[in-house]
Amino acid sequence: MIIERLSREHRNIEKLLAILERELEVFDRGDRPDYEVIRAVISYFEVYPEVYHHPQEDLVFAKLRTRDPVAAAKVGDLAREHHKGAERLRRVAHAVDNVLADAEVLRTNVDTIVRDFIAHERRHMMMEDRDFFPAALEGLKPQDWIEIASAVTGHRDPLFSDVTEERFDTLRAHILRLEQEAEAERK
Image (cartoon, rainbow, N blue to C red; front, side, top):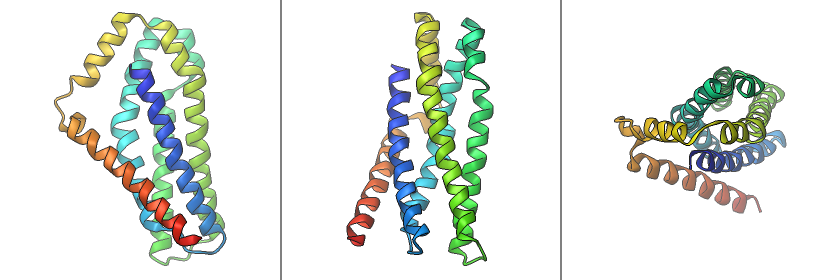
């Protein structure tokens, strides 16, 4: 089911946020974090949530707004939230690029930018898990889910193929492996 998949994706995203947070702690201590891990996490966020996860949520939300405008209003402006998250991610990518380019960057500024992104993503997912998903499960009819599923799987865009799913799974595994290697080297 779509909501189960979106919830599972939230759990995967949380794993990546935890990795980003651990790398930030290394940075905050004045040590050199594993920038390959950080860049891989940023790349994942630039593609997967923006191109795949959020559009699915937007489809569900559009149906909810039609079926139960009051519940949708309680959730808020989901598209705006997603847009703000993308802006925060761009700031993270820019801050990391500046650090790697040896630009004059205050560590506290980088820390603030990355922590702001992590905190926003966590609050956003918590709101969706607590408010949005239950409202959708309660408010939408079986026919709505069929329509949403057909819209999600009906794309001819190769981005939504099984091969692409596998590529994202591979990237996620790569990120987790890089983090494990970085952790092992630090011990």
